[in-house]
Length: 323
Image 1 (cartoon, rainbow, N blue to C red):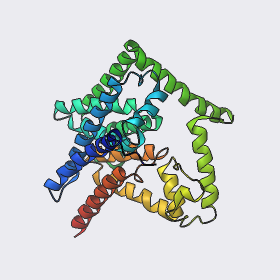
Image 2 (cartoon, one colour):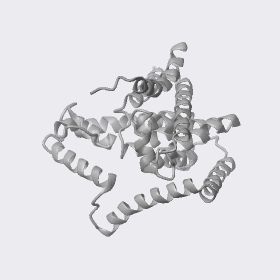
Image 3 (cartoon, rainbow, N blue to C red):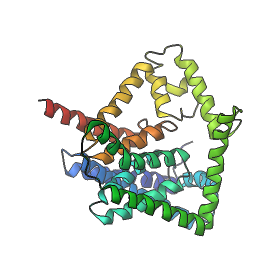
Image 4 (cartoon, helix red, strand yellow):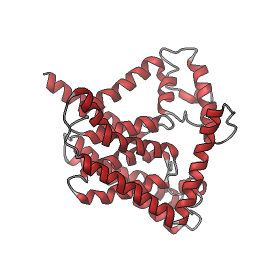
C-alpha cells in the first residue's frame, strides 16, 4: 500500500526537492560545465544535510549514540536514508574542499557535508569519503612523479588541512560522548568481519553476511551467461526485493563481463580527462568507486544524472580536442 498522508507526501518532496533545487539551476545556464554541475550538487547536498540535521536534532528517539536507531528512524523522514543521497554528498564534500583553497567560505559546506556523511553511519560512505580526500591530496602528486607533470596544489596547505581535520575529529571524539559511543560501535562492527576474514572464520550475521550471500548468488547466476549477463531484470530474477549491495556486482549481473569492462572504462576516461585541471572530479570518482564496492551509485537516479552528465561533458571535451 502506498502512503498518501500529508507527512509521507512532505518527506517525498523534501527528499527530491533538495536535488531538484540544485539541478534546476543548471537549466538557467545551458550548456553547463563541470563547475556549474558541482555547484548545483553542492547546493542540493547542503540543503539535504540541513534537513537531516533538523530531524535528528528535534527527534529525541534519534540519538546519535545509537547508530542503528538513527539509520532506521531517519527513513521515516527522508526517503532512502542514507544510501541514496550519499553519492552526492561525497562529490560535494571533495568539491568544497577543493574550492576552499581559494575561498575559505567553502570550508562551511565542507564541514556540513562531512558531518552529514558521519551521521549516515555507513561504513561504505566513510571509506568513500576518506579514499576520495586522500586521492585528492596524494593521487595527482604520485602521478606527477611517474609522468613528470606538474600540479599546483600546495603540499604544506594540504598537510595543514589533514592535520586540522584529524585534530578536530579527535577533539569531538574525546569531548562529545554520543560521538565517541557511535564511533566505538561502528569501529567494533567494522573490525569483527575483517577479523573473521583474516582468521578464516565464518561471518554469521550483519550486513557483511548479507552482502556475501547476495554476491555468492549473483556469481552463480552470472556463471550461466558471463559475457552479457541477465539483462535488466537484475536481482529481481531470483529475489523478491533487495539490492545487490554493490554497483559493480549490479553491472556484472545485468550486463556481464562486457558491460562491467565498459563501465569501468568510463570511470577511467573521466578521471584521466580531469585529473589535473579539475582534481576534485577525479577524487569524487574514486569516492564513487569505493562506495560502489558496497552500495549502488549510478543505479540510483541521482547518481545516473551526475555520472552521465559528467561523461557527456568528458566525451564532448575530447571530441573538440581531437577535432
